[in-house]
Length: 380
Image (tube, rainbow, N blue to C red):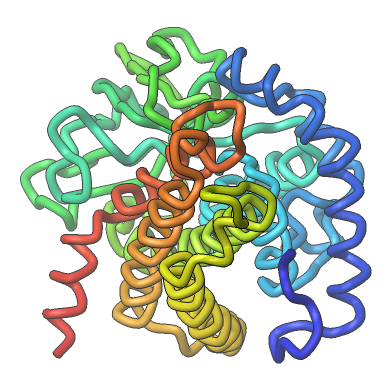
């Protein structure tokens, strides 16, 4: 189980919030997980149930229909959702798309979007990645050309989480292509705009309950008022908000690693080989001891990083280190936990199989481990 007591990042109010999250997961999510995976997305009803309980975008200020809480409550959601094996769809809205609206949108845009985002009636995605531009956001080719009072958007995106469900897309576009990264802007595109279309729901190794889509823009005309923040400031906004995105990924990786370890402990206590429990073999105990020590260090670091972020002092290099270490540690723990299951670990009926396959992408999205090393190296 996830440890609650003795963690400096949390207090009694977080424990109460955590209990609400756990009841929601037990009642509304876990029984439906096989159906969500078969469908390739979680239902809109789940989004609305989460919103009704205040479990979506808790940072939204009360004046816009939210709870006005700080990131520590997001962290509780990250831990519990990931431990329950939820894909990163709701988390993306709470931790990744919401800050762009909170920090850079006009008041009119906030009034339009924030209440629905908190309630679950508006599902968002952020369209960064393109077929030719992954971690290198400077390589974006989607364009938004000013035409009178409108922008005309053309291009395509891929691997977009929430792409099938999304009502609102935050599109990363070039408004001044000749200026490279400095010519990047963010534009709100409603999903019912003529010229906008979705491709297939992509068939992934893991995270089966997250809709991950191709998006296409063919002469999509949007009002200039749909510009998010200032024109040609999009790259700076992306760099600023990636700190929270990478911390969020680190937290979900740590919680998933804990679930993998817990599954392994439960399995080796029950399963026998050569007349004794697998846990009674020294190799098993040594393996688990190493994982347990890594998890202890990981939780201490997560609590430190959360506190730094809430204080506004977690910088880009520190967030990159967190994302790198926790996602790589998650993979190590998940792979070792699956190995301890033996042949059972390769069977989809065991939770460890889902945890293992869902883990792999966290070393890629939000900036690959190699990109994290490059960013850290530049800061030395």
